[in-house]
Image: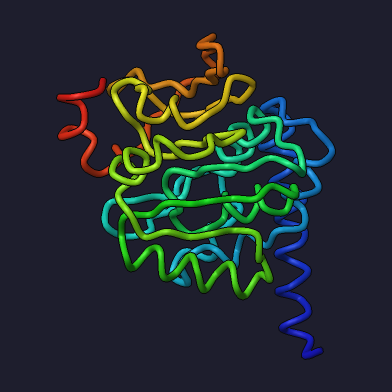
Length: 225
Protein backbone atom coordinates (compact mmCIF):
# COMPACT_ATOMS: atom_id res chain seq x y z
CA UNK A 1 0.00 0.00 0.00
CA UNK A 2 1.23 3.49 -0.82
CA UNK A 3 2.49 5.17 2.39
CA UNK A 4 0.18 8.18 2.00
CA UNK A 5 -2.86 5.90 1.56
CA UNK A 6 -1.76 3.79 4.52
CA UNK A 7 -1.40 6.89 6.67
CA UNK A 8 -4.87 8.11 5.71
CA UNK A 9 -6.40 4.73 6.54
CA UNK A 10 -4.69 4.75 9.92
CA UNK A 11 -5.91 8.30 10.58
CA UNK A 12 -9.49 7.23 9.86
CA UNK A 13 -9.23 4.24 12.17
CA UNK A 14 -7.80 6.38 14.96
CA UNK A 15 -10.55 8.97 14.43
CA UNK A 16 -13.19 6.19 14.52
CA UNK A 17 -11.86 4.91 17.85
CA UNK A 18 -11.77 8.43 19.25
CA UNK A 19 -15.36 9.01 18.11
CA UNK A 20 -16.51 5.92 19.96
CA UNK A 21 -14.53 6.54 23.13
CA UNK A 22 -14.90 10.33 23.41
CA UNK A 23 -18.36 11.01 21.96
CA UNK A 24 -20.46 7.87 22.02
CA UNK A 25 -19.55 6.04 25.23
CA UNK A 26 -20.02 9.22 27.32
CA UNK A 27 -23.58 9.34 25.97
CA UNK A 28 -24.30 5.99 27.66
CA UNK A 29 -24.10 3.96 24.48
CA UNK A 30 -22.49 0.91 26.04
CA UNK A 31 -23.91 -2.23 24.41
CA UNK A 32 -21.10 -4.29 22.89
CA UNK A 33 -23.07 -5.04 19.72
CA UNK A 34 -23.76 -1.35 19.09
CA UNK A 35 -20.14 -0.36 19.69
CA UNK A 36 -18.90 -3.16 17.44
CA UNK A 37 -21.19 -1.96 14.65
CA UNK A 38 -19.86 1.58 15.02
CA UNK A 39 -16.34 0.24 14.75
CA UNK A 40 -17.05 -1.90 11.72
CA UNK A 41 -19.16 0.39 9.52
CA UNK A 42 -16.98 2.97 7.76
CA UNK A 43 -18.85 6.19 8.50
CA UNK A 44 -16.54 8.14 6.17
CA UNK A 45 -17.89 6.16 3.20
CA UNK A 46 -21.38 7.53 3.86
CA UNK A 47 -20.32 11.17 4.10
CA UNK A 48 -20.35 13.45 1.01
CA UNK A 49 -16.81 13.84 -0.35
CA UNK A 50 -16.61 17.56 0.42
CA UNK A 51 -17.29 16.90 4.12
CA UNK A 52 -15.31 13.69 4.56
CA UNK A 53 -12.85 15.40 6.90
CA UNK A 54 -15.82 15.91 9.27
CA UNK A 55 -16.80 12.24 9.30
CA UNK A 56 -15.98 11.72 12.98
CA UNK A 57 -16.62 15.23 14.30
CA UNK A 58 -19.45 15.81 16.77
CA UNK A 59 -21.55 17.79 14.31
CA UNK A 60 -24.30 17.39 11.73
CA UNK A 61 -23.12 17.01 8.16
CA UNK A 62 -25.07 18.58 5.24
CA UNK A 63 -26.46 16.10 2.70
CA UNK A 64 -28.20 18.62 0.44
CA UNK A 65 -31.87 19.65 0.19
CA UNK A 66 -31.62 21.04 3.75
CA UNK A 67 -31.09 17.51 5.05
CA UNK A 68 -28.36 16.44 7.45
CA UNK A 69 -26.46 13.42 8.68
CA UNK A 70 -27.04 13.29 12.43
CA UNK A 71 -24.20 13.58 14.91
CA UNK A 72 -22.57 10.18 15.57
CA UNK A 73 -23.69 10.12 19.20
CA UNK A 74 -27.30 10.88 18.27
CA UNK A 75 -27.51 8.09 15.68
CA UNK A 76 -25.82 5.66 18.08
CA UNK A 77 -28.07 6.42 21.02
CA UNK A 78 -31.24 6.19 18.94
CA UNK A 79 -30.16 2.82 17.59
CA UNK A 80 -29.22 1.56 21.05
CA UNK A 81 -32.66 2.58 22.33
CA UNK A 82 -34.26 0.29 19.74
CA UNK A 83 -32.60 -2.75 21.40
CA UNK A 84 -32.30 -4.51 18.06
CA UNK A 85 -32.10 -8.27 17.80
CA UNK A 86 -31.05 -10.24 14.69
CA UNK A 87 -34.62 -11.41 14.02
CA UNK A 88 -36.15 -7.93 14.07
CA UNK A 89 -37.80 -6.26 11.11
CA UNK A 90 -37.13 -2.51 11.15
CA UNK A 91 -38.78 0.41 9.35
CA UNK A 92 -36.56 3.48 9.01
CA UNK A 93 -38.18 6.81 8.18
CA UNK A 94 -35.51 8.92 6.44
CA UNK A 95 -32.64 7.03 4.79
CA UNK A 96 -30.35 10.02 4.29
CA UNK A 97 -26.88 8.78 3.38
CA UNK A 98 -27.70 5.20 4.39
CA UNK A 99 -25.36 5.20 7.40
CA UNK A 100 -27.99 4.54 10.06
CA UNK A 101 -29.54 1.80 7.93
CA UNK A 102 -26.09 0.23 7.57
CA UNK A 103 -25.57 0.24 11.34
CA UNK A 104 -28.93 -1.42 11.95
CA UNK A 105 -28.36 -3.94 9.19
CA UNK A 106 -24.99 -4.85 10.66
CA UNK A 107 -26.80 -5.76 13.88
CA UNK A 108 -28.61 -8.42 11.90
CA UNK A 109 -31.92 -6.64 11.43
CA UNK A 110 -33.95 -6.71 8.22
CA UNK A 111 -34.30 -3.01 7.38
CA UNK A 112 -36.88 -1.29 5.20
CA UNK A 113 -35.80 2.32 4.68
CA UNK A 114 -37.79 5.20 3.17
CA UNK A 115 -36.35 8.33 1.57
CA UNK A 116 -38.52 10.81 -0.31
CA UNK A 117 -35.65 12.54 -2.16
CA UNK A 118 -34.52 10.58 -5.25
CA UNK A 119 -30.97 11.94 -5.17
CA UNK A 120 -30.43 10.93 -1.55
CA UNK A 121 -32.07 7.56 -2.08
CA UNK A 122 -29.82 6.88 -5.05
CA UNK A 123 -26.70 7.88 -3.13
CA UNK A 124 -27.71 5.71 -0.18
CA UNK A 125 -28.17 2.76 -2.52
CA UNK A 126 -24.64 3.23 -3.86
CA UNK A 127 -23.20 3.69 -0.37
CA UNK A 128 -24.82 0.53 0.94
CA UNK A 129 -23.75 -1.48 -2.09
CA UNK A 130 -20.14 -0.34 -1.71
CA UNK A 131 -20.27 -1.31 1.96
CA UNK A 132 -21.55 -4.77 1.06
CA UNK A 133 -24.81 -4.30 3.00
CA UNK A 134 -27.51 -6.52 1.52
CA UNK A 135 -30.28 -6.68 4.15
CA UNK A 136 -31.65 -3.18 3.52
CA UNK A 137 -34.64 -2.64 1.22
CA UNK A 138 -34.67 0.97 0.01
CA UNK A 139 -37.82 2.74 -1.15
CA UNK A 140 -37.92 6.21 -2.66
CA UNK A 141 -41.28 7.16 -1.19
CA UNK A 142 -43.22 9.61 0.96
CA UNK A 143 -43.24 7.97 4.38
CA UNK A 144 -46.79 9.09 5.17
CA UNK A 145 -48.28 7.62 2.00
CA UNK A 146 -46.15 4.48 2.36
CA UNK A 147 -47.41 3.88 5.90
CA UNK A 148 -51.01 4.60 4.95
CA UNK A 149 -50.97 2.04 2.15
CA UNK A 150 -49.46 -0.64 4.40
CA UNK A 151 -51.80 -0.36 7.37
CA UNK A 152 -53.22 -3.83 6.71
CA UNK A 153 -49.77 -5.37 6.38
CA UNK A 154 -47.60 -7.08 8.96
CA UNK A 155 -46.31 -4.60 11.57
CA UNK A 156 -42.62 -4.07 12.23
CA UNK A 157 -40.68 -4.97 15.36
CA UNK A 158 -39.00 -1.56 15.40
CA UNK A 159 -39.51 1.85 13.78
CA UNK A 160 -36.86 4.57 13.66
CA UNK A 161 -37.91 8.10 12.67
CA UNK A 162 -34.82 10.20 11.88
CA UNK A 163 -36.61 13.42 10.91
CA UNK A 164 -38.74 15.47 13.28
CA UNK A 165 -42.51 15.78 13.59
CA UNK A 166 -44.61 17.92 15.97
CA UNK A 167 -45.84 14.75 17.69
CA UNK A 168 -45.35 11.07 16.89
CA UNK A 169 -48.76 10.09 15.55
CA UNK A 170 -50.70 6.92 14.90
CA UNK A 171 -49.55 6.73 11.29
CA UNK A 172 -46.14 5.58 12.59
CA UNK A 173 -47.26 3.93 15.84
CA UNK A 174 -49.61 1.67 13.89
CA UNK A 175 -46.55 0.24 12.16
CA UNK A 176 -45.24 -1.48 15.32
CA UNK A 177 -46.76 -4.55 16.94
CA UNK A 178 -47.78 -4.84 20.59
CA UNK A 179 -44.30 -5.86 21.74
CA UNK A 180 -42.47 -3.48 19.42
CA UNK A 181 -40.97 -0.05 19.95
CA UNK A 182 -40.49 3.20 18.07
CA UNK A 183 -37.72 5.74 18.50
CA UNK A 184 -38.29 9.15 16.92
CA UNK A 185 -37.95 12.91 17.23
CA UNK A 186 -40.89 15.12 18.15
CA UNK A 187 -41.57 18.67 19.24
CA UNK A 188 -40.87 22.18 18.01
CA UNK A 189 -37.69 24.25 18.09
CA UNK A 190 -36.05 24.80 20.46
CA UNK A 191 -37.62 21.99 22.49
CA UNK A 192 -37.47 18.86 20.32
CA UNK A 193 -36.75 15.56 22.01
CA UNK A 194 -35.95 11.99 21.08
CA UNK A 195 -38.57 9.64 22.51
CA UNK A 196 -38.97 5.90 22.77
CA UNK A 197 -42.55 4.61 22.51
CA UNK A 198 -43.44 1.00 23.22
CA UNK A 199 -46.22 -0.90 21.52
CA UNK A 200 -48.41 -0.50 24.61
CA UNK A 201 -48.19 3.30 24.25
CA UNK A 202 -45.72 3.95 27.08
CA UNK A 203 -43.49 6.89 26.14
CA UNK A 204 -40.03 7.71 27.50
CA UNK A 205 -38.12 10.89 26.75
CA UNK A 206 -34.46 10.11 26.02
CA UNK A 207 -32.71 13.42 25.25
CA UNK A 208 -33.13 16.80 23.57
CA UNK A 209 -32.07 17.62 20.02
CA UNK A 210 -33.23 19.55 16.96
CA UNK A 211 -33.37 18.22 13.41
CA UNK A 212 -35.14 19.16 10.14
CA UNK A 213 -38.80 18.28 9.66
CA UNK A 214 -39.90 15.31 7.63
CA UNK A 215 -41.14 16.49 4.26
CA UNK A 216 -44.95 16.85 3.99
CA UNK A 217 -45.33 16.68 7.78
CA UNK A 218 -47.40 19.89 7.91
CA UNK A 219 -49.83 18.53 5.36
CA UNK A 220 -50.12 15.33 7.37
CA UNK A 221 -50.43 17.17 10.67
CA UNK A 222 -53.92 18.39 9.74
CA UNK A 223 -55.17 14.81 9.88
CA UNK A 224 -52.96 12.93 12.29
CA UNK A 225 -50.98 14.89 14.86
